[in-house]
Image 1 (cartoon, rainbow, N blue to C red):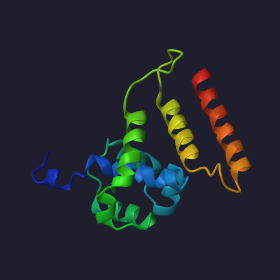
Image 2: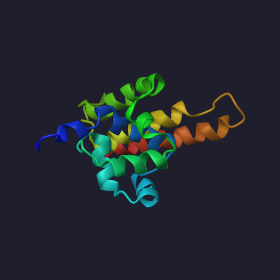
Image 3: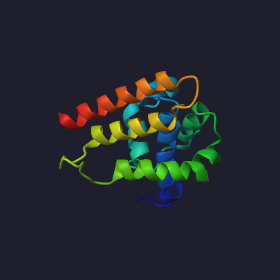
Length: 148
């Protein structure tokens, strides 16, 4: 490591925060790539913590795209920390499902997607039928992943 390079390292939570902001808006990595010019692969490495030292212009572009300040992007709120903790556990830990199938990345992403869909649904409001159908479809998608 070159001298002074560690000062540029971003906190581990920044990648999780970027993923949280992206998922909250139902955006793919490619959607963010189209809007920012930052490749989906590079964004994925930042989100997963594999890329610890993105340049300031990259962090600035991401913050601008999500309409947050760079300092806000670097600091996770308590509400996001609670949600991130569950999502981070699902994404970063090794586990199996009740049927003994070891969770791979696609399964973990599907489970997170299902959770986020459920958390953002309005089952008591005017859209309860539509939201229920969306949840059922997400469950089906997830079951297809773990049954492959």
